[in-house]
Every structure is written in structure tokens, then in C-alpha cells.
Amino acid sequence: MRRILPTLMLASALALSACATTETLPPPAKADPSVVVNKAYETADALIDQLPPNLRAGPVLFATFVDVDALDRSTTLGRTLTEQVGNRFVQRGFVVTELKLRTAVFVKRDTGELMLAREVDQIARDHDARIVVVGTYAPAKEAVYLSAKAIDPATGQVLAAKDTIVPMDNNIKSLLR
Image (cartoon, rainbow, N blue to C red; front, side):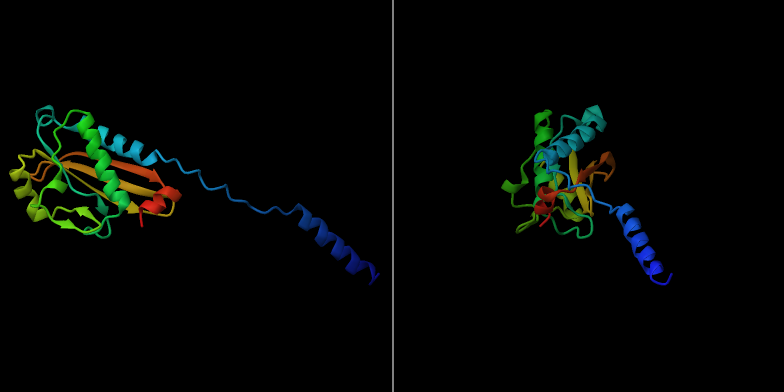
């Protein structure tokens, strides 16, 4: 009986282990190269659609979208989102002033145009801007959370707002460096 017991225990262990399953994770999502453009246009369209009709004819300025945890820092993703949201405003008929051609705005190397809050009013007046679009992004494990606002530079009033989720993939990770 003593010889049979270890054999039965071994057989039971082997039988039970055959029934065990290992959890497999789904493969990473395939990178969609158009996701940034699509999300940027979705964001711009939402902002535009919320704007009061009397402001749709005025010039628009864009501040570089920045990292929510470091408002003086941006990445390729932030600069690309800014460019694409701005391009969509142009496509929808807005007058957009290109600040990269101006020197009156704080420009930080490798970051783009970053408007300091105290300078927004003056820069908007200098350019007759009726709207300033600002944005932040927050990278997370599975997504980047984007928040964009269209602001009246004279009053600081938020005229339109849009939150967007950009799924994380290898393309997005490379833009965050």
C-alpha cells in the first residue's frame, strides 16, 4: 500500500496539471498610424462645433499642447497634436496665425511655442486673436488622455472643451520621447 500511495499521488498531480490553463494576454494592438490625425481632427471638430457663431470668424492662436505634469514641457506628440488641431481649424475656415514665424512668443528649444499665462492676453491683442486653443496630455499605461480648450483670451473664459483618449501603441510611445 505504501508503494501505491506515492504512485497515485504522482498520477493525480500529473492529471490535475494537465487540466490547468495558463492565461495568455492578447497580442498588443497593431499600431494605427492615422490615430493621431484622427483624434486631433475629432478634437478640433468638437471645439469648433461648440464655439459661439460670432467667434468663428476671428483669428485663432495655438499654444503647444503640454504634458499635464510638466506644463513647461512638451514632446513630439504634443507638438504634432497642436499642428494637426490647428490644421483642422484652417480646413474648417478659421484664420490661424502661425506663431513659429513670430518672435513675441516664448519659444523653448525642442518644445515649440509655449505661451505663458501672463503673456496670452498681450500676444492675443498683438494678433487680434479672439480664440486661443490650449491643451494638455497625460500619458498612461494603455492610453494618452488629451484635454483641449478654446479660450477667450480677453476674459479667460473657456468657450469650448474636449477630452479625447488616444490608445497607447508603439507609435504613440515613440512620439512621447
